[in-house]
Amino acid sequence: MSLQRILYVEDDSDIQAVAKLALEVVGGFSVKVCASGEQALAEAVAFDPQLILLDVMMPGMDGPSTLKGLRELPELAHVPVAFMTAKAQPQEIEQLVALGASCVIPKPFDPMTLSSQVTRIWESTQ
Picture 1 (cartoon, rainbow, N blue to C red):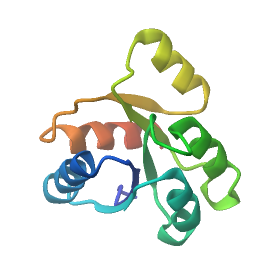
Picture 2: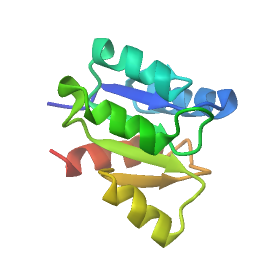
Picture 3: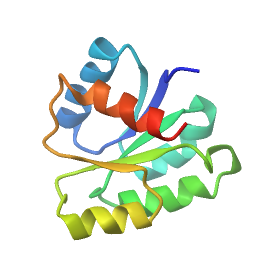
Picture 4: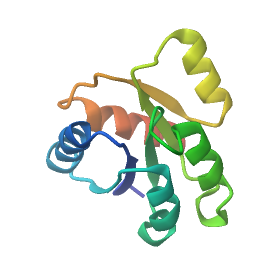
C-alpha cells in the first residue's frame, strides 16, 4: 500500500500553503490541513490519515499535546507521526522521538524534497 493521505497540523498559514503545495503537486498526496491541535483532534478520524505531520510550537495545544490526544484515539493510535519544527537541536529531536514521533523534519524544509522525505518516513514505518 502506498502513502496517499497526510494530515498536516500547522498554525502558520504561509507554511501551510507551501507544504500543502509541495506535498500535493510534487508528491501527489491528498493533504488535510488543520490550523490547530484542537481542529486535528476533531477532524482527523474522519480523514483517516496514513501519516501525520505535526508542528511543535502552536498556540493553545502544542504539537506534543496534540500527539498525545491523537494517540488516545483508537483509530489513530498506530498512525506514524513526524514533527516539523525549527527546534531541531539533537536533544530536542531526542525528546520528540521519545514522545512517539517517527522522525523530525527541520524547518525551514525544502519544498522540492519534502515529498521524498515524507515517503521515506512512511516506508520506514511499514
